[in-house]
Length: 148
Image (cartoon, rainbow, N blue to C red; front, side):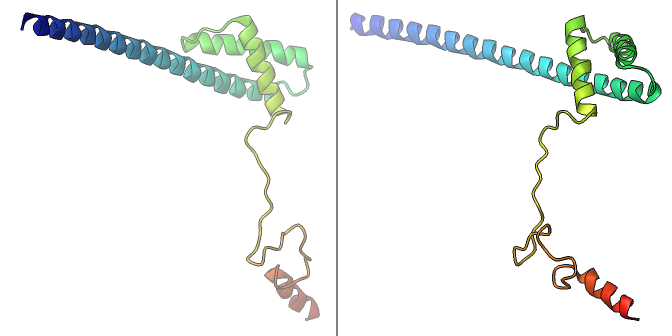
């Protein structure tokens, strides 16, 4: 009888240790996830703030050359981000400003897809005849106005 109790106790001890290990691993992974999520949100805030500053510099210093605008945007971004308690180093700030400038100039468009609209008969608007009153009802109205 004693042997069964000893085995049972050993099995329970091993299961307890395994459970503690699993809970510790999950807690560590969850903590890492939260840290990564915070970093991602902070990066997105930096990008948004820098984009606003670059747009403002582009409007305020329209006639200035690119280097002047870049330095002023950098100065304003450091001042603003430090005021918000957001730390940023020079390399990261340079990259954020360059990215904002590219987006402003249309060099990088993310997530925009063009799909032509379709009518019930699946005629593409681009391929349709503008004088066809079935596709463009206003063509019929314009036609009757022209005949008056």
